[in-house]
Image 1 (cartoon, helix red, strand yellow):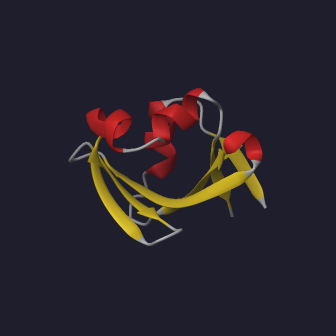
Image 2: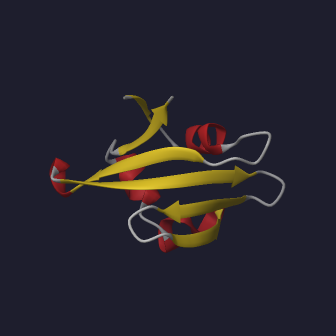
Length: 88
């Protein structure tokens, strides 16, 4: 499996955006590498929001860009260089 590290919020937006609205596959490394959390993320620039499916339990979230830090742990993962996009 190939992957790229997500560098910042703008990079996340560009990597999560698909013209056809599809979701992209991401994962974050947790607990210093002891665990992994898979997510499917789609960015909707027209609405300034992310659609997130948490693969562990199928939970769905609609999160505005300015709420990423309070509603998810994506910004924390980016700051720790622990958020990755799966390249197919």
